[in-house]
Length: 316
Image (cartoon, rainbow, N blue to C red):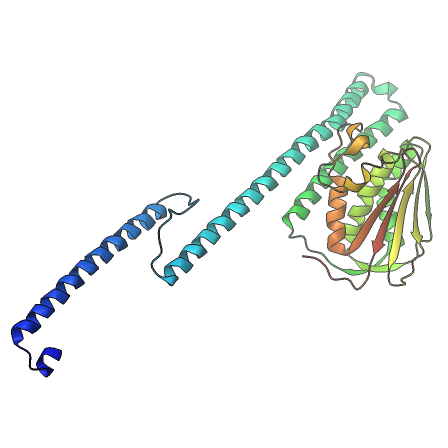
C-alpha cells in the first residue's frame, strides 16, 4: 500500500515484502519452538502422579508470570497440607499405641479375675466383683475417650447449645464415677450448684468426666473431692470448681498439662498415662467458650476452675 501511494517501483515493494516475510517466518519459528518446549514440559508434568515443583522457565509475559506464581503457590499449599495430614496421622497413631497399651491393663485384670472366679465359683468374694466392675468401668471409659478423640479431631462435631442446669450435669458425671468413689473410699462434696448456663450438655459432661477421672486417679484412698460454684464479679459468668486433696502437680508441669501427649511427672508414674485427657478437655472447652485454669501444689491437691462465659462466640 505504501509502495503504491509513493509510486515506487513494484520491484522495491516486492523486495521489502520478502524481507518482512522472512523476518516473520524466523520469529514465528522461534516462537513455535519455545511454545513447543513449554507444551512438552507441561505435558510431562501432567503425566506425573504427583507434582512437587515446576522446572524454572523464564516467563515472557506478565500473564505467564502470574500463572507460574499461582501454580507455585498451589504446590506449596499442597505440600503444607500433606505435612499437616502426616503430622495428624502420626499423632493419631501415637495416641492409639498408648491407648492400646493403656486398655490392656484393665482387660488383663478382668481376664485374671474371671479365671479366679471360674476356678473357685463358690468362693467369689464381694471384693472380687467390685474389682471386676472397676476394671470394666475403665475399659468403657477408655473406649468412650477414643471415640470423643475422633469426634474432636474431625472438627465436625455438632454442638447444640441450650439452657442447662449445672447441678444436673454434675450429678450425671458423679453418678458415672460413683463406683470409683466408693471403691477408693473418696469423699465427695457438692455444694452451691444453682446456676443455669447456655452450653452443650453432652460436651460439658465430657469435660467434667475427664476432670473427675483425674481427680479420682490422683487422689489417695480416703481423700476428698469437692465440686462447687465460686463467686465471680461478672454475674453473666459461672465459675465451676473441681477440687481434690490429692498428690498435686509439679510447678514445672502446670504450663504444659493441656498440651497433646504431655504426661508430666504424675502421668509418667500412672500406668503410662496417655496425656490426652486434658488436651481434649481444652479443645472441647474452647468450642464451648469455657476457660480452664488449674491451680496446684505438690502434695497439696489440685483445683480446676471452669469459667463458663455466656453470650460467647463459638470458635470454628
